[in-house]
Length: 458
Image (tube, rainbow, N blue to C red; front, top):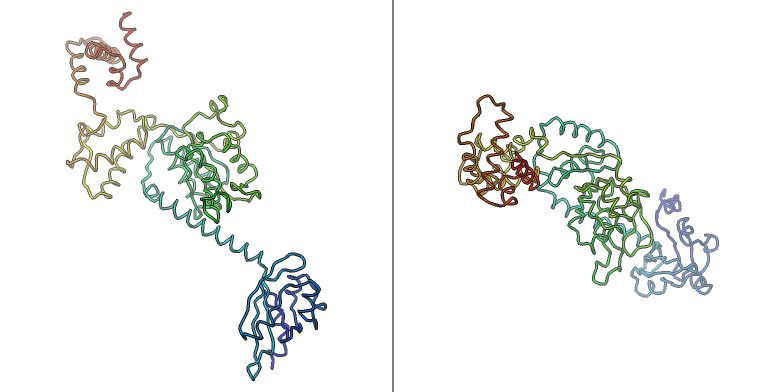
């Protein structure tokens, strides 16, 4: 029979170590994988009794007697003289009378099994972390993006070039300018767009938890922690992009550990001693002036220069007015669809949007539109429906200031300067307080103070 002719070769194809013994424990065959796993040459095993090998200290477990008694498979852990632990999985082979004729034993390395379990646990942790981050980011991923200004088009063009590389990126800009949008677009344009995008908000993490959140912790590190340890956000982003938002808020100790990640591409979990390699692209963002933070000793200079590879400085919304109305309209359309409303802006409202200084940038605009959609009972939003509409008192002051103004023979600049003077002086007489007047006029207090001094001197 062809199988009988080639049976020894067939057994050699097994990935597992296999030995065959008779009912008395005499070893009849052991494949090469068995020799490699135990370190005992095959010729030293053939014809030897497993009981003798136990007496010699090579083995410490014999399965044959138990299998002969129960006629059932049996599993035990074998410890070799070298200290290596193996799992023995013995199976009986019966003759025509139902007696045990042979015992086939499979050997598996406990160390390998432990490694496989750790890998499986790590993958499960990674999956849970990724699913959690995806669910948190679902709303942001569906938000619209709209740019019309020349400077923003140039920045998005620059972004597409940088995205093709694996360079570290530093996004600068005021709060709410859209650093999050840039980071996500960078990831989607990169070769790793199908991998994870993980956002870590350094400014909102409790300082005593930042290290475990970013780097994770090893099994048994904390008494009340996960027994299997916990994967950090850096590991969760492996193969993809890690977005470190508000990186200027990181404590100095964490800056040191992050520097190691950027230099060596490896991390050490809390409670662990062995570093592990991670393949992750770092995109950092801050609204702080990092150069001043370095001078003040609050930010490591070596980390700053590691981050300062590809820098994108996003301008505030007030400096790209061409984006205001397109963004407002697309936000309006998005929220109307989401909440099943039909709302539009009047021309006067759109003009007011253009004139607003937008200290909160795109985020302020987005929240303003959202608030208008969910609270307005009208289908047409007018100037009065906007939360930053000038107060009635200021409007009255402006009208009073224009009364009897002589414009004949004056340039537009001179007329506007006279209007400004009348509004500020009239307003000061009415409120009697520079801070309050500055707030109503949406001007800096020093500006109002300087102008009043100038008018007094005139």
